[in-house]
Amino acid sequence: MIIASRREFLRAGGFALAGLGLAPDRVRAAAARFRARPDSPAPLEVIAMRSDVAGSRVWFDPLGLYVEPGTTVRWIVRDNVHTTTAYHPGNDQHSLRIPEGATPWDSGYLVNPGDHFEVTLTVPGVYDYYCLPHEAAGMVGRIVVGEAGGPGNQDFDYWVGRPGTEAWRPVPDAARRAFPGVERIQNERRVHAQEVVP
Ligand SMILES: [Cu+2]
Image (cartoon, rainbow, N blue to C red):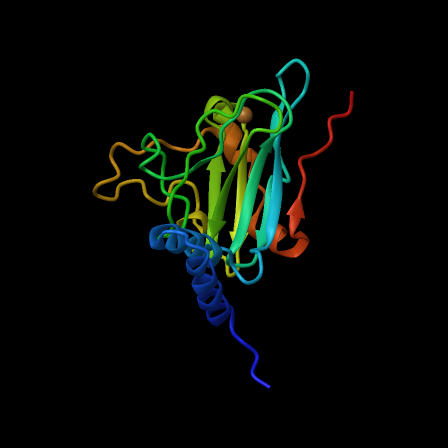
């Protein structure tokens, strides 16, 4: 017995569609959409973007996360207005704290509860990111993808004095204090911000 691969099934489906009189370009478009769906969906992790009612305390939850390479991470607004923005010189001269060769991201402002933004992280290493309006308040997060390594695994000032980094901005003090350690993330997989005791 021959088990047809998805591609063969698709080809057969394409002929069937052509037989129904659909224009060839419509068939190609339909085939492309079908191919774009992965055989098994990428694993998905969700990070909530949080705030207390007064807006005086803001945080990512979890703020530390371990994932396997190829995982899609989705940030979703629960309260207040936020961004998720990678530490990368392309993002307003922030220092580089994602792996070399990884694509930086910037969600832009996510303003309504339920607004969300996704990236799929394939390059192993440590990824640090911040919320644009709340970085100075310590709203930052860290994701470890597979093996820890890269600039995000180094101390915050590793780049100081290196040629080409003159315009880079140092990580604010409150953000430095907020990042969970890489080893802790590897051990616990999900690190949550400390609960506020009223
Ligand atoms: Cu924020």
